[in-house]
Amino acid sequence: MVAVALVHSTVLMRERLPEKPPAWLLRGERTFAYPHKEWRKPRVWCLAFFTDGHARYEQRKIIGVGSAFPGRRSGTYERALIARDFTALSLPLPLVELEGAMAASRQYLRDDGRLSPVAGNNLLAAVRGLRPELHESLDVLENSLGVNAPTGEVGERLSLEKDAVGTLLEAFGADRDPLEAWQPPLGGDDHRSRSVPFLQGLPALRQIEDQQIVHDYLRFPGMEGEDAVQVGWRIYRRNSQSGHRLFVYNANRTQAETVMGVDMIYVNEYARSVATVQYKRLRQSGPNWVYWHDDTGERELNRMEAVDDACSAEAELPQEGRQNFWIPGDPRLVATPSMVKLCRTVPFMMNSASLIPGMYLTREHFRELLQGPESEGPSGGTRINEASVPRYLNNTTFTTLLRDGWIGTRGTSWDYVIDLIRKSLSAGGPGSVVVGMHRSEVSPGNRRVN
Picture: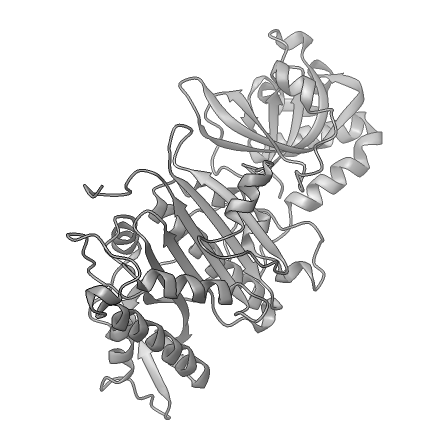
């Protein structure tokens, strides 16, 4: 069932909504400041009837249809409102003409925001009855907003990518609200659309046109950019005045049905720190949740071990052999980059900003569990039973330590890992990678280091 909302347009909305969106807004989304009022929850994309916003209800008219998503409060009296797919009515429709068809739900015509399910259905039916010429536009909107969440391997991969993007936002110190606005990317349910990155389904809340900035964020420090297939970029700030920027890159070059995991990479340029997370899926086995370790998992673990060993060797170089120096008094609780997140296989949830419950482990801890006495399966094979893991970092602890710079590389190992990241983002890299690059001129987290 599609959610239906009434949006009373501001002056700027009445001017801009009928205009054709700029070509660089791929989904045609535009964000407006809108008078704040709590909409009915949950906050989801709604099929919206836009009115002319007249102060007197008796003279208020519907001027267009489209879809809208209510953002969080952006000031004392305003909120952000994302609008797209706007179609103007050739002849405005007065709200009072809908009262008869709305029956007992007519009171909601004075409302603002998402209507109750019954009132929304009645309003949609009433408009269809009075304006048959809108049937095609309303059908398109209903189809785009009523699509079921992806399931199967596609849904599992999107769940992991969403979790990675949410973890980056959390570690960066920003709200995870943008995750709630996800919609299936344009292109329908064909084979190609199922393999696009999760980030491609998020609104383009911030677009960068300046070519120097584009050049800047397409490249990591000291290396040239390389074009990739099916790439999504978003740029986030903690708030409008913040000097902190998070550049999020989500690449998926492999069909979703063949992707086994997701790599998350967090780059903190100020601290010259990099942390990576390899997602491992727990699958239900009777009453238990179990991770089964196979040859592919062993190869991935060996690669992580090689990276950690190389970073440790860099840290042990004599002072004169260092290319860069870390700042004394800037320690790490974990000075190697490789982490593992064990998380349950859960359905992909649209309109949710929640992270997947899971267990963050260092690479050494993960290896220790695989070699433990409980790792042997009843019929052979190597496994980790969720209930047998005595200690781990949860989402809150991990993102806090990551945000404050207690986890990740330091010193010369930065250059080594950055080069590996570049390779992972090339055409020969893994199928699914989510990278967050935190840039700022002021220290993140609890630091007094100049």
